[in-house]
Length: 360
Image (cartoon, rainbow, N blue to C red):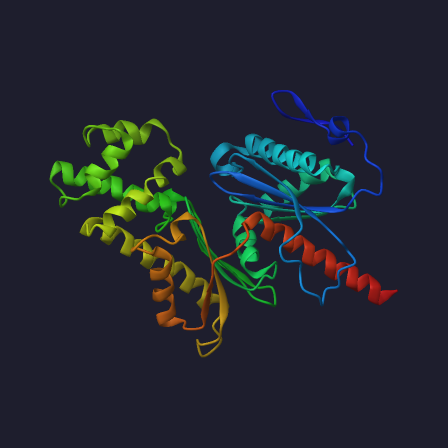
């Protein structure tokens, strides 16, 4: 297998780094979740003697975990994204004591995979670095987020609300749909970036007299160690990172909890936007059934949806959705999306193993 550089002239060659392992080494699956902020890769031990009709292991047999930076090619460029993905996989395999020959499947779920051409391009370079027997899957990161709440089963709807936001749905017969997820310029309203950007705008408007007074001014300026709203302009444009802006969300929530009406209005608008994304997906896929009352899993993922003190955005979003679709069953996953990606690959391999057994 050809050696390939991944960063600063270093060589990604597991056998050279770890020594050639014996062929009886344990089989593994790599699951990757790549978002706008960071990329996580887990290495899961795979036992193909487990039958498809039996339950998936709980907890999943994770033997290694590695973290790297952003792997969204729309944010950092294709070369940097590829370097990040290669490095994080190399790190996870190194920590697990495994080599590429032990890998049975790789499920790579990253933000920025929005079109079949994205999938084909990434599949192409994955095939360059893994043996031919390895099953390869490339998906948007929303797919892994859904799977982490359903233990690898693609059915239901997932709402991701972190730095960015997307609603993604999948039916048992393979139909899929999405809403939002187009990035901040094209309107990922309700995301961490969207909430924080509105808060910064509110501070500037209050300062120049176009908007009402708000506690956001003092809270955000103190957090950023700035003395005047005028300084926000330089701070905001000094670094284009979306995550840097989104990190201000906790201050918006705190001000809302203190009764600030501007902050409350921003969060209420975010709730409506997030709920409308889910509703659009549910309607398109008829996840709720023809009468609108069927049950379906609604997986909630992302920092914006983590439980807060008195102002619980996740709870408000669910309440808004349930008014139209009472069958929504909210799930807050107990495992991270990278594990969901690994479980997706696990399910495919188990099905493949079962089919081969039936045909013998």
